[in-house]
Image (cartoon, rainbow, N blue to C red; front, side, top):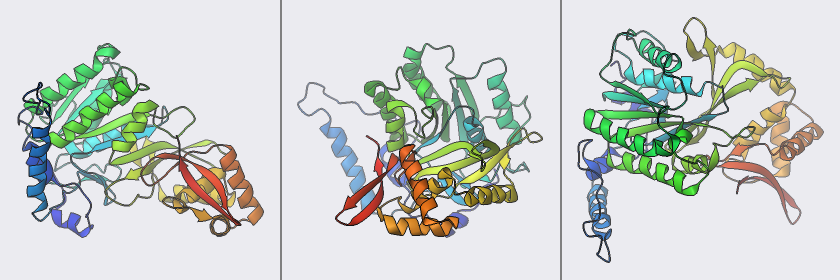
Length: 406
């Protein structure tokens, strides 16, 4: 399927990836028996045998050299998605979240002889994949069929073909309060139908549970996904909307999803120096559990390609310079997030860094910081948790730090 060699990945210094050794030690394969259940529910310790069996597998794995799993998908040679993980694409409505997911699907399905360049996405392993789309939003007559055609053609297939490694369903006709059970049935079905690694896209995740603001509904869905990646050879890509006007994935489900996810990407239109949306789409990494957080990259819609392509570097650079010259609050906020990602910083040091970055006066920078705090601008720390900028004082020293939202 035209994948890069493992030598390339080893040169990229992958060192913190969960191993397939451990996962396979617990599950072995997709066709393995269903998740273990307590053998005797009347026993005082019904789950202890399961826990001790997992402990045994961990003990065996710990005593051996750990061989880290290669990533499934990279972007411009930066590792993005690893096997047996939960991953997230979030953003406001209408910012092409699904099209970013479609590019990733095409990357995994791409034929070896297909010349298409998929906006810098590449598959990095020799594994064969099955891509499964679970859709909840698009109609069955035009919108979803067109999206599926787009995935196939970008991967080098004709629309009338039916690739063996491509499966798709819609939950539109299933009542919302029944969708969680319907999803469970489908996941059980694909695990018995396909023997290779299964990449499952849930678009959108909030439609797969009865109430994304309820703890019980949200945790039931998240727990099921978490169980699946630990017991079976599957990876999830979850699409979720952000709360209107805020850079936070929707509801209690969004909060828990961010906690459990290995990678979180935020998709949104980039603004110009006047604060208006441009045609540039920024993909920002809010969380990268297995690597340091990657720099954002930029896409734009191409009428010829009928999809997203990498934006021209010159266009991105010109826009960045215009925004930088005006020291826009959004641009200043991005820099603040970089500086305060993991620890507080004294006010004087932060202001001096920002003055240098934007070639602006102290007064201008301090005014921008006040605007950012007053506007309750959304930030994310290195764990991907939504935060807000807070100013605090200890004695005579004034500090800024990112405080996680309650």
